Image (cartoon, rainbow, N blue to C red; front, side):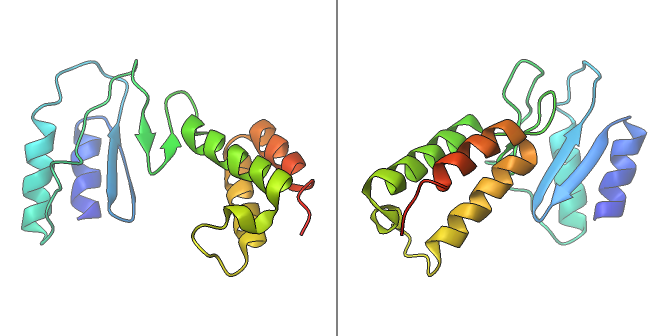
Length: 140
C-alpha cells in the first residue's frame, strides 16, 4: 500500500506520509484535488484496506492543518487546544494536588504529565518550557 501511494504522490508531485492508519498527502500546487480521494480509496481497497471517507478531508493553506494531533501549516507545532488543556491540568495539579486531575487513573500520573510536556517541548520548546515550569511547582 505504501509503495503504491508513494508512487501516486510522486507522479502528482506531492509528498506522502503515513503514521499508523493516518495518510497524508501534501504539496504546494493549487489545483482541484477532488479526484485524489476516490483514487486513494480504490488503491486502498485493492490492497485489502478501506478508506474512512468520514475522516477524509482536504485542507487549504488558509486552514489549520491538523494531522495526528500536530498542526503542520508552516512548521510542526502543538495544537493550541491540547496545550491549553495540559496547562490547565498542570495548574490545577499545582493548586489542588496531583491526584485531583488524574481522571484517567494513570498508575504514574506524574510520569504521564512529564511525557505530555516532553511531547509539547519536542514541537515547541518555548511552550514546553512554560509547562515544565508549572510542573516543577507541583508537590506530591
